[in-house]
Amino acid sequence: MTEDGLRRRVSYLRVSLTDRCNLRCRYCMPNTGIRFFPKDSLLDLEELKRLLKVFRDMGMTKIRLTGGEPLLRPELEEILSEIIRLGIEDVSLTTNGVLLSHRVQSLVAAGLKRVNISLDTFQAERFHKITGMAALDRVLRGIWDTVDAGLEPVKINMVVMREWNLDEVEEFALFAKRAPVEVRFLELMPTANNFEGTAGADPDSFVSADEIKMRIERVVTLGAEEPCSGVAKVFPIEEGLGKIGFISPVSNHFCGSCNRIRLTARGALKTCLHGPDSADLRAALQGGADDTELKQIIRDALTIKPDEHFIRPDHYVSGNLRMSQVGG
Ligand code: SAM
Ligand code: SF4
Image (cartoon, rainbow, N blue to C red; front, side, top):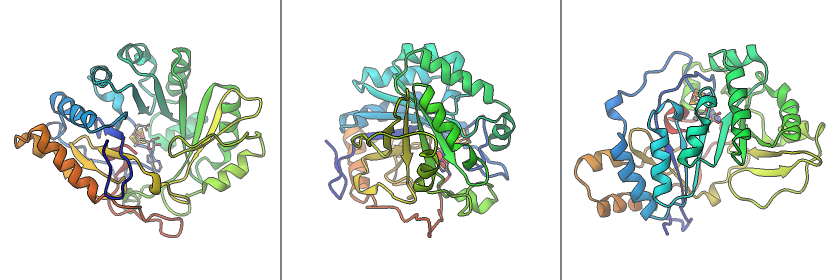
């Protein structure tokens, strides 16, 4: 078992497999364009496998693969199989869903059990404007194919922005009523992109989880909140097939019970999404560190994991977070 300096048990690793993406979501990437990291600066498959084993040995019981867009990584199935082989059953994926449909079967065969698919609108033109690609149909196909393949749960992540899609939250709630999916409404987080002119990620765009909940309770009746099992507050929908979740990193952060750490595509350890890199594990690997040394580097970084981040509705700034490089 691994604990941080505040004795919070750390058991959840989020791994960004690439900083590259086929979309350019307005709230995630700068609209001035983004320069991706050179490929040879990313963890290769063998380095990644080595680090996954070290994290497994340190007590990580849950892993989420993210990006950038993880489906752009050709070895994704092999990485999934390796995680299962290491004995970690709770492995999931966060994807924009564009490339999901034709890969669902191979992902399931590799051991994937659950998936989060990001979708911010049901309107084709709006989808194009928010993400930079006319691909709504492909994402919807990906959602239904994962449901049909029996992945459970299928979660839909909607980042709510006042001027872009707040008027659709009721429709998303009704979608969760008629489909066996969990729709999770995410508060928009500030990122470093704000300073580069990214539309849709500023204080005026921010909508609190309370305001979203008030809106959707006009169209669905929520049951009792489920016992907390993560960062989302989850509610069943009365007479519905799916569920609703709220994630409120800004208005009501959950740092006190944070059990997560992150590995970036370049092999940096991040002990807080909103903090700086905590250790360069790839450099340590390339410098010849053995597993014992790697574990000590990780433990040392964890002793200074921040107790909380300082983003609030009235302090809506982020110094350095580039969401597509860290994976959310
Ligand atoms: N490309 C994949 C996707 O979009 O699902 C995985 C990486 S993406 C960075 C992970 C999650 O972060 C997505 O659900 C995305 O909507 C969310 N995200 C990105 N920027 C965000 C922001 N500024 N505030 C809140 N969530 C954000
Ligand atoms: Fe790509 Fe995901 Fe960021 Fe959108 S949110 S640009 S899909 S990494």
